[in-house]
Length: 168
Ligand SMILES: [Zn+2]
Image 1 (cartoon, rainbow, N blue to C red):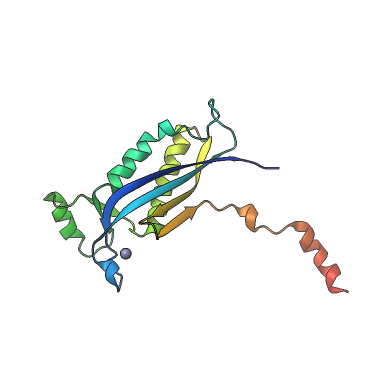
Image 2: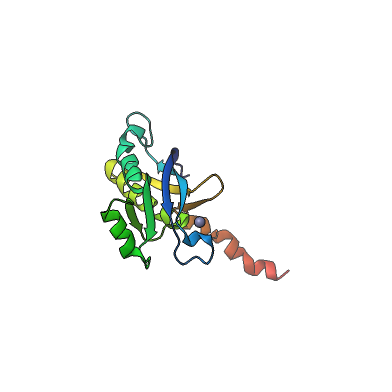
C-alpha cells in the first residue's frame, strides 16, 4: 500500500492587471483582478515537527508571488505591444511582468514550476508540489496538477480474463 501526507496553503489578495491580446472579446483590454493562489504540498515522510512543509519557510514563495502579482501589469510574451508596455515600465507608469501567457491555466503551470523547484530544494527532495490553483476572482479559477501514471494503468487481471468472457 502506498500512502502520503498532504498539506495546503493559500495566498490571496494580489491586485494586478492583464490583457489577452488575441482575444476577440473584451479580454484584449487591460482589466484588473485580485488573484489568489492555493498550493497542495505532498510527501511520504514528515519533517522533525511532523509537518509536510514548514509554512514559516515559505517566505521566499510569498515574496516571489508579491513581486509577480502585487500591483503589477501582466502581458503575454508575444504581445505585439510589448515594446510600448516596456516603455511604460521604464517611465514607471506600470510595473510590468511578462509571462509565457497570462491565462489562469498558464499562470498555474508557471507558479507550479517555481514553487515545486523551491520546495524540493529546501526540503532536500522530501517534499513536492502536487497541485496549484490560481483564481482571478470569486468566479474563475484554473488548476495545474501532477498526474500519476498508475491512475491510468488497467489492472492485469482484468485484461487476462477477457478472452474467457467472449466464449460465453
Ligand atoms: Zn478576461
